[in-house]
Image (tube, rainbow, N blue to C red; front, side):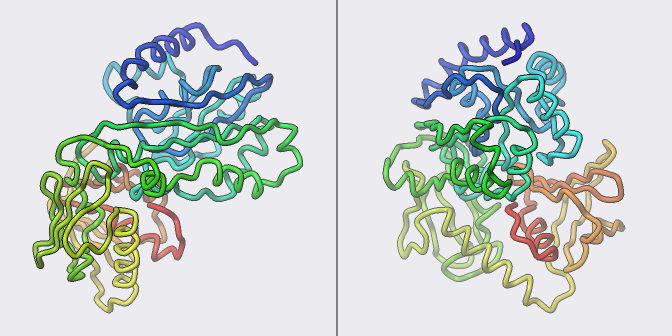
Length: 379
């Protein structure tokens, strides 16, 4: 194993010690990666904004993190952390050829690399399935592999939520594979190992452990994702307030309880996972079957491009989006992603476009894009 630069090791030690106090309120427990004589890729599901801290407590060796660039744009603190931690920075969680080269460079130099292949938190508590590109990366790296699963993180702050909660988190080393063990495996077989090792269904786990997650306004933001009423099937009729989410067209109302489940009279779904599946299915059917040229529209949307902001109306059609007088053909867009729950990002004609707004539901636009592309990619 290569010797880690002094500045990075000191930073790691400080974060490790300081975070012990921080993690006490989450009753955090973890397995530990055994000492290894060769560099490894540490691959985990992604559930919180501080997953990198959890990984640091699981590994006895220094990890170089593959991280999205936005935290490092923060004035002063961002550049300082970039200097001290020296992460492998990717844009919008999209690992490019140059990023892979940098990962390979660190591995070949004898360092360990930590990677969260989902690139964003899960909407519904289920780990997003990875394609064979992750298996190819492990294969060509020649590194060992450690798979790690975080449980409980989803309920601390679901991706759609506006507020945090506190409650138990745990980390589990689910697999350790030497480079020799991986040598004769195909990328597909390695991908299957990873998908199995990092897979978590938060609600299945919670049904067994029944941990309490305390907080205020725990339902606020649900309508960003669960915008179809499961009772009357009205679109965009759901509103959240405190721990409750209700339909403005009928009397349907649910309350988020301490265990992260939903309660209410004539309850259709007692969890976000199943309600989300219903919304996804109904919305997809609506988009596919509609004969209207215009699918949806959003007002007072803020567009940022080339560091300039403008406000206007974003519309979605079956084959393109429009913003004011700009047309975006869907077949010319790339890196279409929803960041957090209220930001839509994509690349078009060599530029990066970022849309957001107080009453903007970006999930809808990303779903229209994936329906057009006829893929099953998670948003």
